[in-house]
Length: 98
Image 1 (cartoon, rainbow, N blue to C red):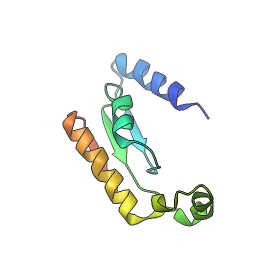
Image 2: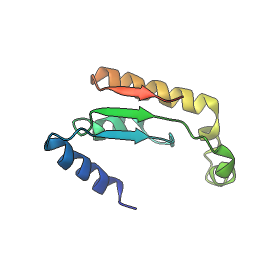
Image 3: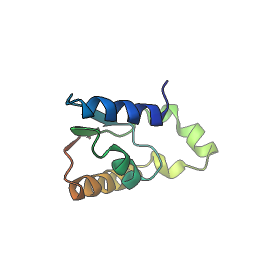
Image 4: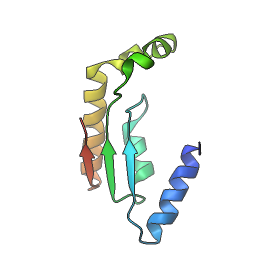
């Protein structure tokens, strides 16, 4: 798979040519939602947000990494709100899928 940097560069190049683009932010992963929004700004027409739908497949791995909190409803709701707040602040279009 392409790196995040390569994907962002491709989005920017395509978007700059007037082609409508979108980003699918899902599943929500541990990290900084505000930074993610700043990286996507100016590269997409719309952002779709979704949670992790198959938690059972990663619970053990997240536990081993000390990321148990990232499997909770609280985590997904908080990250969703942080994303929404940042997207609204930057007047970016988005749709939440959960």
